[in-house]
Length: 74
Image (cartoon, rainbow, N blue to C red; front, side):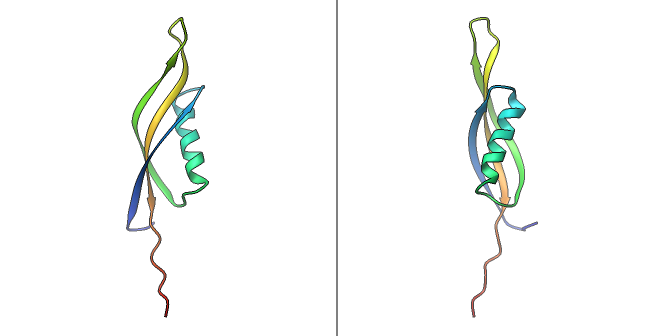
């Protein structure tokens, strides 16, 4: 585990559940960010149909990942 971390804030959505929305964000982040260590849900929202049932869940997530040690050239 790196001793230095960076945090980025990402948002995403899914139709199934809040957990599905979080998994969507984390999976997409993992395609370009390595060493993801933790996440924190910052905001949850969504859309509802005419009966009031949720149809879409949106999440904003802070993702913490390790920063690689610098490479020394010499």
